[in-house]
Length: 216
Image 1 (cartoon, rainbow, N blue to C red):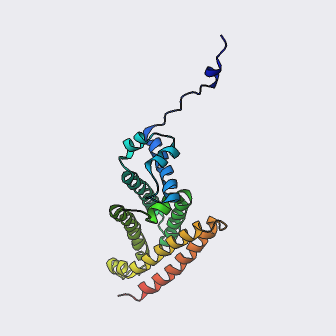
Image 2 (tube, rainbow, N blue to C red):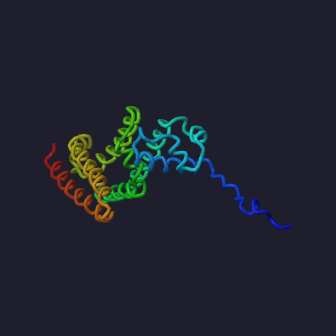
């Protein structure tokens, strides 16, 4: 029996995604929308439409726009921290720093919209800012410990960490600044950006070794 025109035009139902996969999709789309318009100007309607889901479904997953933003922070922050911590297996502290910064730049490249919104802090509420600061602090602690490993054997570990802490802040600040610069320069390749950060790491390592050599 021949199909009617209505039957021919009927599309098969959309494939349902597993909840975790759907949630990740929503977070990715939300990062793009927030990054494009800013937190205040982006509505749940905008995000639902961009995701191809209903607004009630979006609320079912995240409860509110603030809940969605908080979930985006936790996803981006935990991913970055875990990726950087994973390079601890590298025994040489200098190589570990380079590897960690490579992981960091790959994160910025892959999740640039999340980076702009989350670590740029645009539109973040006070609670979200505290969460962002918490993830930054975890990265900072790992950096301080790594730099302190370059101490002379006679120097106390706690003293070494105290002496290198300001240099660790400078290094991470430079890394974030170069990432922001690179995102604004589409003509610059990620390899060029990584090379710039590598130069900052090498300069920091020289300062750390000099600082620790004269410490008591």
